[in-house]
Amino acid sequence: MIRLFSSAQACAIVAICLSLAAGEIAFGQGDGKRAVDVPRYGVHVRVPQAWDLVDWSRDDTAFVCDLPQDRNSPVGHASCKITVAPENLEVYQRQFAAEGKLSADKAATKTQPRRALLKNELSSLAKANFLPELVEKFERRLTAEWEFENVEGVRWYERRELVIGDGMLYTFTLDSDESHYDAYVPDFEEMLAAAQIKPLDVGLKRIEEDYWLQSEYHFAIKLPPTWRPAFAPNGRMLFYAVGAAHGLFSDNLVVLASPSKGLELEQLVKEMPAEVKRLDEKAEVVCSLVPQGKVTALETVIHTKRGLTDVVILERRFQTKTRNYELKITCESKTFRKQEAELRAALDGFVELPPTAKPSET
Image 1 (cartoon, rainbow, N blue to C red):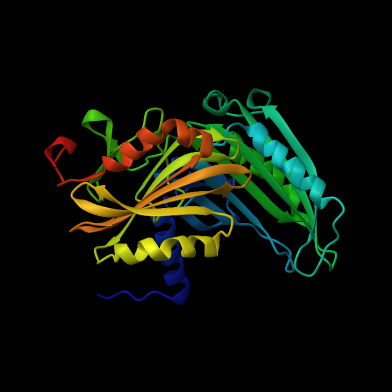
Image 2: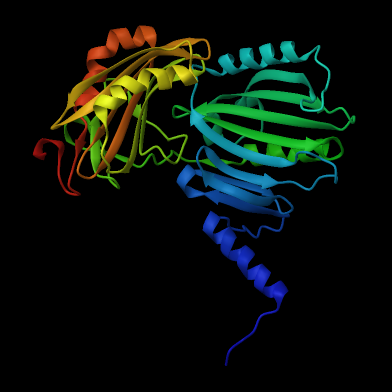
């Protein structure tokens, strides 16, 4: 016998399926909360039942929950983002202080609300009710609290909690309208205090001779000494690794790929400098053709800035029988000069592999 569902039942079934896809599991502890479990990002938290999971496991975002708000509220979210750690938390504390100073005398406009920094404080996790494993992993946190007000006089608040562990920065954010904010802060704090944070799976496997294998796309790179694989901030990045941190910026290596198609390298040598300068007029650009294994690559060296940091970007584009690749190293200028030979050797050592092959077999 075929069973027909009402529209309400059908919607409920769809909601359950979406929750299971996100890894969301109800604990059933009778405290009015449920779990948001995002295994790929190693994040497991408990939130009030009224917080609606709307986004998860995308780029640098572990999860986003919508929070009940007044009708005219422009905000109402709780979220967690994961990025490569800066040099330390003090770097962000100084940045928030500078942002607060710039915002202090600015009035709200039609496009930009007034913004005021209310709190910018480093504290030890041991002084809060955090799980012992969180205290050991993170040790301390940076709390930043902002007040916003638009031209209509509508106010809302944002609270950010930043912690660093395993070379990654976890940013938990709460934003809410004025009437709900004070009630949501305790729930937000409880979520943080009981969070389960596991090491991230970066999707790369170490194989012989210190090569790191991208097992899905079957290529490998031997990283420079002191560099390590990291969690990619963008889903398009097939391989992501980092070196030293310089303030907010970290040296990094990225691999992108696309279906194999012809590259007009001679033409690109002529066109690339103008294209780079069109996007960054202060950049200094040099292009040339270099050997890349058995093929030829377009190599572009760019001297520019990332924020206040002078950087060098070393980029290679080339085609193999399998696909087109773009390998890019972005490195603080002084570090690049010291490590240039090792960085170039990393790009030279890029290899494509059969599923069971090792680098020495190619």
